Length: 596
Image (cartoon, rainbow, N blue to C red; front, side, top):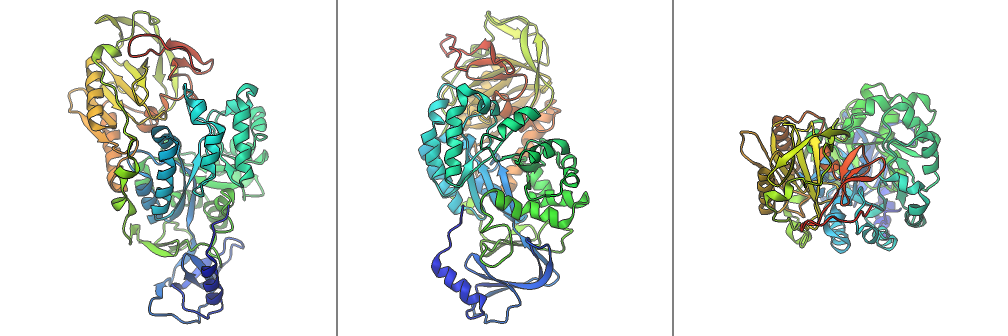
């Protein structure tokens, strides 16, 4: 993909390169790291519009409007690129981008799954276009070709013609991670997926991958599908296995999995590093606020002894090439977009100043320009996307008398993994309820309350009374509770809030966190979002939650790609066999048919 430059601007660049006209910005007196040769040489960087006209000593004119940025004792490197992330609900796509650019990440690529499920095709097309236009850094999108959990309307929502229309938009760089990768190897399911993958290739766009848990044999098969990358390696050998198959490997370090230290030894085992890049893969807002974005991953690599040339390439030119943007981003060079980080030296990747798209946008970690998120018309952009949260009484959350006893509960082994564990049930109010004091009943539904799936979760939070949220990968509603009455109150509070997360610990007051934009995003600054996310995590930890990152638990309880039991539209499901252990029901009490 090429970022088009106005021919009139090209004429200015040509003239400025020959020192015939005054530029808009001169970054003077610094040393420039060359992404192509690894050299660090004294040079000025001359900018017209959003492009670099010259890298070298500037002897030409400076007009009254020319901004001169003093780069004495500074090393200039390209803006960092985040090729794979998720705009989580405590922030929003603009405030996340603002926080990222203040730390030198000048390009972000977002997965749009939750937004698509919440908004639908037409509204999403409008919103992604306006968000990309409003953002301070470059913001691009990847289109999912399947959901993370099967549901009745999936074939329509992810029909090939729908995905083709999304891919036709300039702000889309390709297709997003295919988490249900086994479908690509299933002849009965693969054909429409493969057709969309080829559509993306035909358009010169990428197909991002997700191959968690794939054996070497299946990994080799997945490499034939047209998928271009994987970010799911958790150690050096898995990273090498993906490289050997010709895949791009995005080395991940997030709040759920801080794997980078275990991945970096792969650099010593391969002679070539041009198909490696970094990703934070949707780290939590507090994690990003505390540690940083791609700058943090570069710092980890440097501290581990990775050569600066390799580490900075993995943060700049490599991801630009992966995304198909290598002719425009990823280097401080003539004709490229003017994304430049000013560092104290190469050992310190957190920038002292950031130029993005030809503007000085940040100094010392703070923005020097207005935040687009503060004036963006959020309500207008997300209009019509409010979830229709049902109004259910306490009886709705009782397990029916027909439920298996003992019940196949899901014991939370980590933030993302459950293990099937039998849990005895006892009679309660005309239904059944778990006997263990630690057990939580789970209820899940869609954004309109058209069905309900019930389950039991163990070892999540010993003092949690109830929790309700619209913070799920299905963009529906998830409830957890120790009593039917507490669950009903949580749902009522969530409905009044219009979407978000509410919870209460034993002996404490209710905590409420609103996501007014479609039930999936908060307005306000990134700092405020990070504070809210900290308060949410603190509240859940005060309830006894002891795993890595609570947001992933809420996200993944309703997806059918992780072991061992999950809540789906079909019911409470054993993932390995997709057997429905306890079927979903309609609110009137009838069992739903298995849609899986």
